[in-house]
Length: 109
Image (cartoon, rainbow, N blue to C red; front, side, top):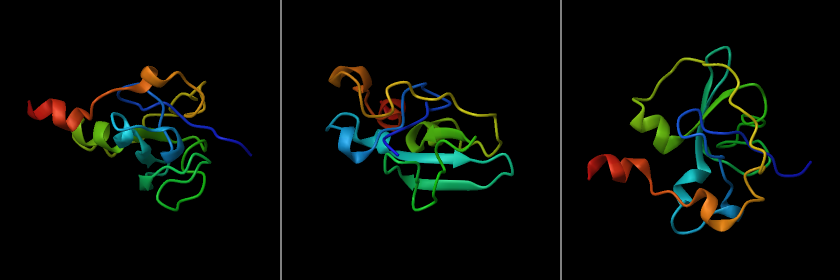
């Protein structure tokens, strides 16, 4: 199975793997997923579905956030439905497309 991803429930950008980040968007590889039953997984996304060692946390019907976006949103705990599939698979995109500063830094400024 190849790369795949979902969009963050908050910022609507793809959750990225370490293989597709740069100095600007490196924070986008850390995710939080919430399952329909309320299970929460957090950690680094591997590009193939696993978040923090939890297999198929992405791509398995979960609500998905970048960890930074989740924190800025107040750490919501409720399942909000399936986050949209990322058409760029979190890997196949033009470099500036996901060049966003960490929202936790922007919230402080």
